[in-house]
Length: 270
Image (cartoon, rainbow, N blue to C red):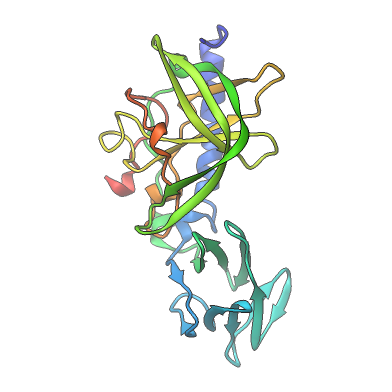
């Protein structure tokens, strides 16, 4: 179903303001462009080149042993010596600081990882924005949210080969585009009640990033209607860096049309 008639000029300005804010988050001094490595922890303590201490994981969860002259700041408190982070939930993370760097300790796909983020990382310093299709209200439609009777555990792949993610899909969103009825399996967004959809389409690997893009769908209204605006389709961190573990779309979210809207392949992958 088509969205309401809108003021095109106002829509484009609103989109430009939104995309400027989106890129500012990406270019944050400790955002994903600042990640310098992706370290997979094991029971064997290992010293990392871009973080202090020796790191391991086991029955206690993640453990770091800092040298005499080394220090991390955890929740605002300086720590030295041996520090136990404890078990970290799947998709959870703890951010610690080390000088001007953030040391992310997280769990992805059943594995504990350390991902240092240094503001002076060349990828972040050289970031010049992301190419996009010109915003066009044609790609803004109204969809209908169709909740499942029960959330469906959905196993998807990841940008890292061999890694799997499992998300509970609460439902799907059905919409019409150029006279075709399409649908996307939705996952829960960050805000309560909100939805997101991972997808690929006929532009993937041609003008847009091959593995995935993500669409924030917002919160369905009382009539289960939800805005589907492909102009706001964005890249995930894996489009910029190999140090991300982003999920891939479920098979049914491979749209058989060319969505010439939203973000294109980053310059960094050109």
